[in-house]
Amino acid sequence: MARLRIGSRGSQLALWQAHHISDLLRERGHEIELEIIKTTGDKITDVALAKVGTKGMFTKEIEEALAERRVDLAVHSLKDLPTELPPGFELVAITKRVNPHDVFLSVTYDCIDSLPKGARVGTSSLRRQAQLKAFRSDLDVHPLRGNVDTRVRKLEQGEYDAIILAAAGLTRLGKTQFIREYLPEKFMCPAAGQGALGIEIREGDAETRKHLEFLNDPDSRAATICERALLNKLGGGCQVPIGAFAEVKDGRLQLTGVVARPDGSEVLREYQQGSDPVKLGERVADALLQRGAVQILEDVYGATAATPQQP
Image 1: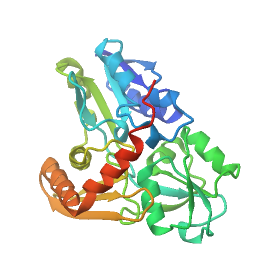
Image 2 (image 1 turned 180 degrees about the vertical axis):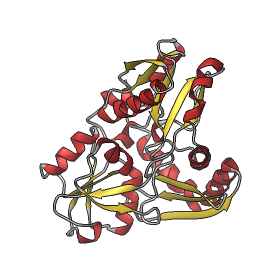
Image 3 (image 1 turned 90 degrees about the vertical axis):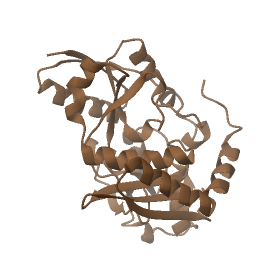
Image 4 (image 1 turned 60 degrees about the vertical axis):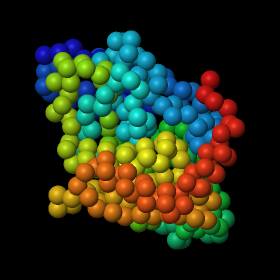
């Protein structure tokens, strides 16, 4: 059996994910070491993610460790992984997906409908903000940064009336006590890849690939590759107002794609079915572009282009 070194971010959720993969590998007799790597996204904690505007902000330093052979594999939240990997890397496995949806959390209120006018809602995502504002333009939406613990604590301490987070991270960490509502994709379309883990290795590393291929879930891979194809065609990273949700039903892929203005004034939604993940993702993206997504995304990129780049 092999000795495998895993690179991971140091957040509580990232470590849970890395330990989860470590346990699966140890069950097969492998010896595992874990290296914690601080990424740019971990260092910038006082700026809304959408304002940083740099792809790979949660992955670049981990990929550098891979390239330098300090680690053999990286465990990522798939939604943080850019749709185009830099040369020299490959996505060897996409794990079985857990609940990909977003959830509404509140200490006081049972659902989004019950929030009073002007309620303060926290979210780190333009995608969530846009879809929320389309439904409730009267809400006061504020940026929310920090790890899952920090965000939940801010809610508990009364800084926000409600927050929107991914179900997957809360479930993995057992932080579900304030979940009041699971948000269906028809209302809040998730981020591409949400709920799945991506396992990245050096391109051509056949020995490591052989040990990791069992982690790949075919249906989750098909669905998330479809979502990532849509995101890639639209030219979006993980911090733009684009949602994508695909699932395999009766042997066919179904994909919903969303592009929205951050203020919620315009939401484009497209739904199609197909069999080829990449072709379906690109087809839905093309349909959105033809319906006006080009202008929305140009306006969004223009608004964030002047913000400082990562240090």
